[in-house]
Image (tube, rainbow, N blue to C red):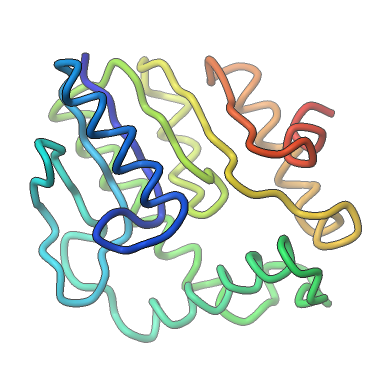
Length: 196
């Protein structure tokens, strides 16, 4: 089988999702699968690599403009802090928050790379980790014939940014119910939000 994994980060960058994916991808390669991992390209790293038999694609192909990356990071950190620590970062609509434009630009990079890869080498399975960071190009996900699965590694507490992300959740619920074969939740909170 050809399996694509998409995430924000991957080995050698240490983190829960990165470590989990390295182990998962390594095991899938050992079982004879053709594994492709697509993630954000850190400064100074090549865009194509091979780690333990895993075909790596770092997005975008060209280095990210430092200003765009800085804005992406600010917005992503706001999401992270709100989800994990209820820091009240979302005091206005998401599209008016600092870094939102950069966040969307990076998501466009992800969507374009995945679209291009799927055209060159169609996947049997596309498995997205924390699909809202990055958003991964939902229109592309709707169009691919691959089996699609999403894993939600984190979730927001009920009194944090729920009011900001509820419109997105509603939009994604429709996408999931018609275009995804399954979802994996690592918390009851995430499962509750997505299954309303």
